Each structure stands twice: as C-alpha cells, then as structure tokens.
Length: 495
Image 1 (cartoon, rainbow, N blue to C red):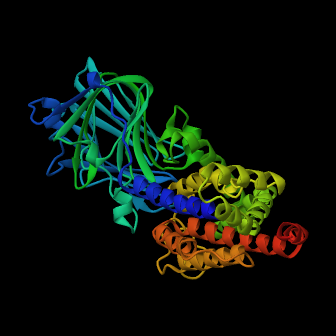
Image 2 (spheres, helix red, strand yellow):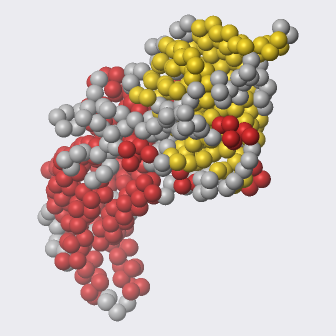
Image 3 (cartoon, one colour):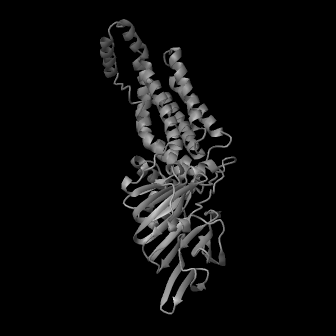
C-alpha cells in the first residue's frame, strides 16, 4: 500500500506539472538562425508602407457575402492598398481583425482604376495607359475561403493590428494567439517569442497567418511562394507587420474556425494549425475528438457524449482494472505478513526483500499491477485535456444548469469538489477491512483527493465531468468486486 500511495502522489504532482507546463511554458519552435533576423530599426520602404496606418483613406466600400462570412473591402488610394477592414464569420458571429484589418498592396495608387463587384466577386483593374493593365480579383469560395488573384509580381500582405479576442476568458484566449507559417516545417510564434521590435523570416512558404484559440486567418499560395516576413507584437499578441511576396498569380485567403474537419478538407498540412497536444499523443487526441463527435451525433449534447465516453473507456479497460483492483486488495491483505517479515529480519534488508518476494510469488501478487491502469490512461488523459480545451466543437457547449460551456472551468467549482468527494470515498472503500495503517500512510492516502480538487479547479469543466464520471464508475466496479469476485480469495489470503 505504501508503494501505491507514493505512486498516487506522483500522479497528482505529474498532473500539476503538466497543467503548469501547458499554461505557462509551452515551447515554441524557432526557425534556423540562417533564416531569422532581429531588427530594432529599419528604413525599408516595405515596412513603412505596411506597418499599419493611423488612418485609412478608403474611398469606396464593397461587401462580399456568403453563408460563412461577410467581408468588407475598401480601396485606400493614398497608401495604394486594398483593405479588408472587417471580417465577420458565421455561425459564430465574431469579428476577427483588429482596427487596421488586412491589407494587400502596394498598387498603383495614381493610376486610373475600374471596379466590377457583386456579392461574391470583386475585381479591380488598374491602367496607366492603354498598353498597361493590372488586375486584382477577390472571389468567394465555399468553406470560409476567398480566392485572391493578382497580376502584380510584388505584393505586400499585412495584418498589422493582428486578430482580436473572441472569448469571454480574455486571458485564456490571448494565451493561444500565434503567428505561424508553413515552409519545410510548421512554425509558430507567440507574443513572448518576438523579443525585439521586429523579427524577420525569409524563405519559401506554403501559407502564413495568425490564429486565436478558435479562429485563424491565413494566406495560402496555389504554389509555394518566396516571401520576406516581418513579425511584430503589440498588446500581448503577435502581428504580421508585413510579408513581401515576390510572385503574381493565384492565392487563397482564409477566415475560418479552427476545426479539424475543415482543416483536413483544406489539406496542404493545415491540420497543424489546431493545437491537439504534443506529437507523441496528438494522434490519440484526433481519435478521441472523432469519437466525441460521433457520440454527440447520437446524444446532441457534449456533456452526455463525455459521460458515454467515460463509460466506453471504463468498459475497455475493465478487465485490466478488475485484475488491478484484485491485486491491490491482495496487497492490502498480506500487509500484516509483510510487517511480520520486516520485524523478524529488521537487521537484514536483503533477507526482508527475499522473503517478501517469496510471499508475492506464493499468493501470485504483483505490487505494480495496481498502477498499470493509471499508466495506460495517462496518454488518454493528456489527449482528452487537449481536445476539451482547444476543440471548437466544445466551445459554448452547454450541459446542464450552470455548466454553459464545457471548454472552460466550472464557474462554481461544483464538479472538482464532487470529484474530491468521490475520490475520498473510493480511497476509503479501497482500504476498508484491511489491516491498520500508520498515521503517515493514512495522511498521504487521504490527502490525494484534496490534491485532485486543487489540480482540477481550473481545468475545462468537460474534463472535470469525465473524471467525476470515471470515478463513480470505478466506485461501482470496486463495490462489485468486493461483494463478489474476491471473497474467497480474501479468505484464502487471510488464513
């Protein structure tokens, strides 16, 4: 029992370290030194043109509309940019861009231009003379996309005010703000990663963009494109100060929710945008998300889906769990004999170890099997944490009464307190009927439920609901084992 207690304490500390790690110390990948430059001052005309304008000089305003979003388009004839000052996406009804919006230029602002526009298409043609005509085209596509086509060989893409927060929990939302790009690898930058005024990255890219916790905007080329990207930061969020792109042709603009199904549909590696945990258990997160969505299709409530998921996991691991519970019970029952051995050979540690191992072999008891179910479920716990915290499907998903959003913590801490009570009862039930324990063992044993409450206080309520359900199912399983399957074995062990 002593070994088990120590392991349970280790589990609790591991959960706590895992929580702190995800909250404060998530490591960001940085590009190779050869492609990264830090600059505090520059006179580049491209930076000056795209570092953001205190005032936009928009002469004409147009709108592109679809069932996915409404995009406002304006022409800034002073700076020579086409500006998207506002993008609102449905059905979430959220605004994505900061005050300066998204700018694409720089075009011939002194030229004569003509506009052809309707709800799904915006085309702008510039002409210096009858022999020189340039075209910029925006066209609405399905799935939160705009096609962008230009005949200009050098364009500047800028989101100089970044994205804006969309969630009630602003602190949590801002913690997920990232600038990102996909070249040979997927790279992300949080606010703290940009330690100086600007950070420059050059190379060939598939796409570049910005993200919040649940939404993103990105520019993707039909083919890979070469770009000089300058990132900046302001108000605790990363910005794309500008990206100078040296290629005309076809591009795609995304203003979309971070949905795994949608990102997989986009292809081109965009599934990397969603944060589903570390690479070693990310595939488990994807499987769990698909299972939860399937269960939701049956119940139409993610709270019920999580309860059913906990039941599935318990059934899946029940053979191992039952064996583990029996082994733990056996370990408790032979504790008096172990103490006798320790007392009889108190001056010979080697003899104590030999006699104890013989006792384990005689009664076919393994002291480590009690820990096995928890070890196996560790990756599932981490993966479920990532899914419930970051999957947009859980955003705003209500369960019952006060639980109006399963992606955030329980506002009244009811679930973590119930978890503690269930864990305490499970501990009491596990140790009932066994030999008396010393005060130190009892202290650690009954401190664990309190530790569980503290660790889970700020976890997503969906995860709290899962753990509470799993605890209740474990209690029922333990009652069944104690009332039936182990009575004869208990008698044999205590003879």
